Length: 559
Image 1 (cartoon, one colour):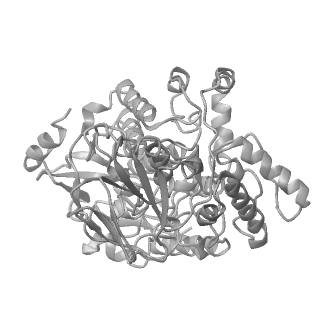
Image 2: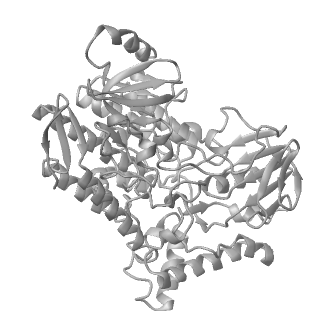
Image 3: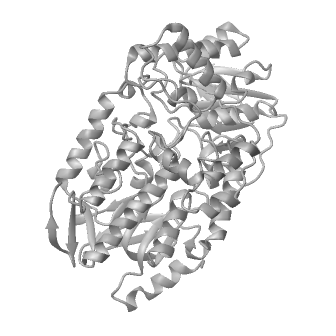
């Protein structure tokens, strides 16, 4: 019900018990499943707090023209209910934002989730009270509620990055941000439009704006290796075949590195085949589209520089083929970092946009944007006038959504202070000194390198199993030991050092936000390896965790 939060806050003084068993933040893929799992399967009292006015998470906020998922819809969907899998019909191979949002609203309706979600409510602070073994969750509505468990389902890409230039308050034209797009149609017809940024969101919005604007100017700092998506209508025969074996496909998906079963298996090494065979593989994956070329070509392209050179040069060659002007093509070809060390981007007529007379590319790598002005923007070299500016400048990824909630754990320790040099977690889901805090698809888990709905289900199931274990054994708190956390941080950093990722400035490394610690934010060994580790932890009786009863340690062991 919409007044769940208010009623709980008003009743807080009258009861020594927490207002809820669990508070969940976010009503996207993670929050909706967490509510269903904890409320309907575990029987807990659950409240979901959502900053938006509706469900959807990233698909509620990112509704800019062209917004689309680059994981096939048959994979990018829940697996927890076979009935849901069978009844929902996707119209496209890669679903657009409106269709994904309709899907998530259907899920919320089907499982009657709306009644326990409080919308238009943003979390201001989350503080652990050791005397009551509860989290005190304060919101921008002025209410504070308590809960035994705090579940962050705030997502990995939910805090847009602040622009690195001034003047966003002085521009007199229309100013938009892809990560917070308005809930009304935006008309580009007859307008001079600027798009700042050429990552995934920038590529998608540029492709659409170019078709409508009088003139579009793209401000690019770093070119991207965009490869074909190959979208199209859903194939009824293929969909029927998958639905007939959905449980088996989901299990197979969970036993892969990224949570997706591809039409091709990757070969061990790009250097172990002839140049002719290597070219055949790349051509084949290029035509298949999507993640086939990055994840189903060769296994060593992000660990071996010589292997990576082969795919980097291949993609550069294919980009050049798309651009009519050779000089412009060279400005669109990435040369300063290896392919696959940034989040892969995909395109559908993105490069075609640059062949249009109404599109101009401005390289700001040597002449950065210094400020927005009343009439447009200013770089180190020139002034530009625009009717509309679109910021596609990315996100404060992974850690940003958690730190924005001002979480404080035992003994007044702020999560922001503990993570001052980078995130420290165990399994990417819990943090020493922050009992009963579960960070769904948090930093140092496979998260954004894993098919997100499956990653969400794995993490929520882990949290639910842990809570069930506590209840069954009479404990009331769980947190990882310092030793387990230290070992996990070391393992994550070692995995990163075995790859090419640390050499590239990417949001995977936290390098896109000035002042943010430069450390790999994701577990790189693969979702299948990660799942095995988590299963060992559960089957071993949570020996890497400290468990307590009524605030007193009753068991503290390290596996």
